[in-house]
Length: 476
Ligand SMILES: NC(=O)c1ccc[n+]([C@@H]2O[C@H](COP(=O)([O-])OP(=O)(O)OC[C@H]3O[C@@H](n4cnc5c(N)ncnc54)[C@H](O)[C@@H]3O)[C@@H](O)[C@H]2O)c1
Image 1 (cartoon, rainbow, N blue to C red):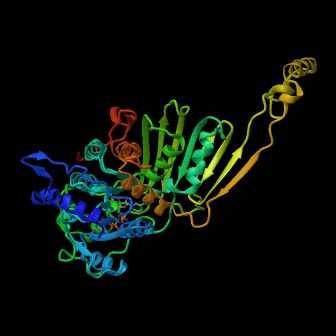
Image 2: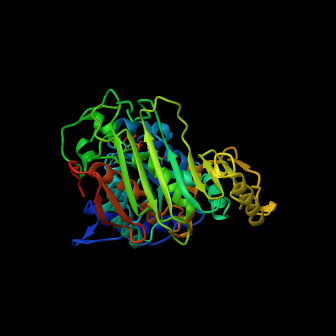
């Protein structure tokens, strides 16, 4: 251990012990923040701990460790099998493993936590970790409900700690290139964005395998429920939590979030003002209470960064046809079609002259009027205004080995080392991307248009779109 790390741990241990004693971080009934006592030295290893060692917890941890000078020191999970598996997967039989995330955030040797739990736990663990003086990498969507965003942002600001939200695709080379092209004006003024993420298979529809030893003995069911309604142990709900609105955020929170994050990154947009969703549970009638088909329409207002545009997002988990998932940003001088791996820019500019003939009213004119029309047209539109620039196509392929996931973590770690809060996806950006997807769910379940102020990040009065819809029960 380097001297600076020793001092760091010494400084933090008193403060962390304080955090640990109350279980939650309060001192004499007042919220306590562990101050930013010392930044991690640029030469120090950053010690991480992952809370939630399920599918993405494993991928996130591996991506984090693909960066130099990062070490995994602890994990937390509510299913014992995953705690055992983590020790093998990360080749450390002595890895500290616990069911209780509070034991992780109380540890003085943890610099940063990765919050990779189901969505209903994101805000609670993030806020507790920031208060305990930890840097936080929190998976998307940053929060489960619109009402929870501000508290996370406040906790982050107060803590002075570094936070990154985990929609890692914006750290890919193709998203960076799309941003460069849009900002350079390559497609003119954006007017429409469309994106879809269809699937047609059980695992794609979130029916993940349930382990044979799942039981109240191997799973901490009460802890999993957290602030969700109490109910008896149900292994399906625990291992397939995305299917239930008590714990997840449906297709919008799982998939639209990546699309919206990408669009905000590329366009520098703060978000839409009107959000409307419609959908259906069409195929996966397996007890889930979230739709498997959803289309959402969002109105983005004109800002200094872009013109007004409309965005249409779709997920269909029952698409038995040809699936071609793509995002298109359409401007008045071209289109960018992109995925994580590659990008195609098509430049297409209309000529100044509108043309005449073909499927047009010109042929209905009398010969005299046609001749007169032609004369006038040729005077008004000289030859150089009559031809369009040839359509240009530019293909961009991501460099081999472009590792967006590791790069997203690299940005997090660089900012920790610099003592900066300026990550690519900080909680303000993270909430501005999460809010529209949470509004998609509100719109669907409550059958209304949600009005949103993306600048102040507050919900405005909403308008009903149908009568007779039963309001979904919603916890705040
Ligand atoms: N960025 C991405 O591309 C991406 C991809 C997949 C998932 N995710 C996100 O990652 C998160 C986890 O998804 P997943 O697919 O890994 O789910 P998962 O069910 O595989 O894993 C979640 C784990 O969290 C644990 N857990 C639940 N509550 C906990 C608590 N209070 N304390 C400690 N552990 C707790 C569970 O035991 C479980 O093992 C979700 O927010 C999801 O949206 C992001």
